[in-house]
Each structure stands twice: as structure tokens, then as C-alpha cells.
Image 1 (cartoon, rainbow over the protein chains, first blue to last red):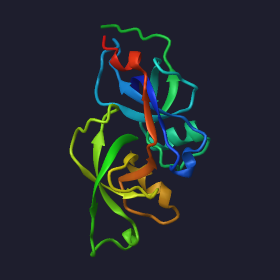
Image 2 (image 1 turned 90 degrees about the vertical axis):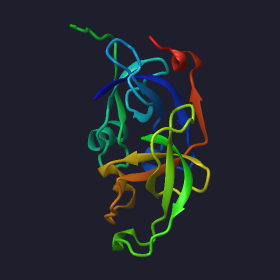
Image 3 (image 1 turned 90 degrees about the horizontal axis):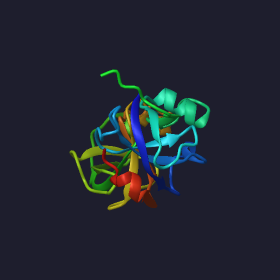
Length: 91
Length: 96
């Protein structure tokens, strides 16, 4: 799983039926200190996250499908599975 | 999933039987601001995407799921056509 910041969302009418009812969020990977860590990606929201939140994103299909749609086997490779309250960095 | 733009079509006569009838498109990955990055790749279309459209695609094993029960060999499938992308001006520019 990775840490990311929610920076927006995508509106799509024509999509795979398994995405119906889900929110497709644009997230930007971040380091534990909050700095950017790579290119943005899209993730289906499973926890009612909001724009600006730091979140935990799972990047594995089975887990992502199950958490965001309730059952596995959907064409979903990333899902937001947690909203981060704080990160303690031992370094 | 990631954003991409459809930039081409691939025609292949000789291909895996399970690819028969599938549309192969060339897509250019885009970041959230719709600037292109990385290399173009070949994707299978599951939603009827066309030339120039902004789409989002799914990578990996999950990319073959839209075609079940047919086992289509794909690691990159277009799963949605983008109407619009909203980016929060504050969060988007936030760099710490």
C-alpha cells in the first residue's frame, strides 16, 4: 500500500459496470513527510475520503475490488482503503 | 487506474484466438493535468473508446476481468471514458 493525497476526482459516464456508484479519485503519491512521490493515479474510494486528505491506497486488484465494490473480480487495480490521521516517522 | 489519451489503433491479423474481436488501441499515459508522460502502450478497449478521447485504464491481472468468462490476455484495458477531471486548486499545488 502507498500513502497518497487526494487532489481531485474524475467524472465518467461510459465505464465498466462494476464502477457504478463508486467515486473515482485522483490521488498523488506522497512520502511519509508529505512530499510528492510520483505520478498521479486513479483509485476507487472505499472509505468516503475527501479532497485534500492523506489516504492509504492499495494497489492490488483483488483487495481493491473487494473493498470498493463489495466483491472481488472487478477491473479495479487501486482503491482508497483508509484516511490517514497522522504518520509518525522514526527517521 | 491511470489516465491516458487514445492516440492510435493497432491492427493485428495473426493473434491469440482469445483476442479475436477485441479492439487494440495505442494509448499515451497522462498525469492529472492531462500532460503526457511515459511511453505509449497498447490497450484493449472494453468501453468503446475512440480516437483522441481521454480514458482511464486498469493494469495487471485485473485488466482481463471485463471480458469474463472469456480469458482475454490483457495487462492493460481501457475501463472508462473520462467526461471531466476535477482538480482541487489547493491540494493540487500543495508541495511540502
